[in-house]
Image (cartoon, rainbow, N blue to C red; front, side, top):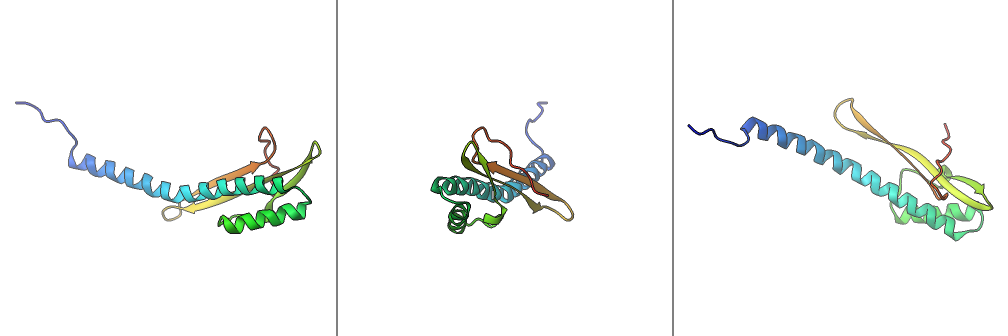
Length: 123
């Protein structure tokens, strides 16, 4: 007798459950990453406006409103003078509830500094 090849019903259910879980996880993570990229673009735009720290904060707030940024605001940004230029950096955490007491913690940080120097975290 020839032996049949393929996946069993139980195997198919397990594979579909894992794919479903990964799909739900991706649907929860992708919006937070999209917001992170919007914040990165907003701080670059704010830096390019030049001027004072207050003007850069106003520019960031305008971009935050247009880009639906809700995780941080201009008061959460860190400004530092490096080689005569003002560099802007940020750091924040995003907690995504999964199932019951389990959750996923994502730590985002970014800067306008060349070389991507890490921002100083405020505790």
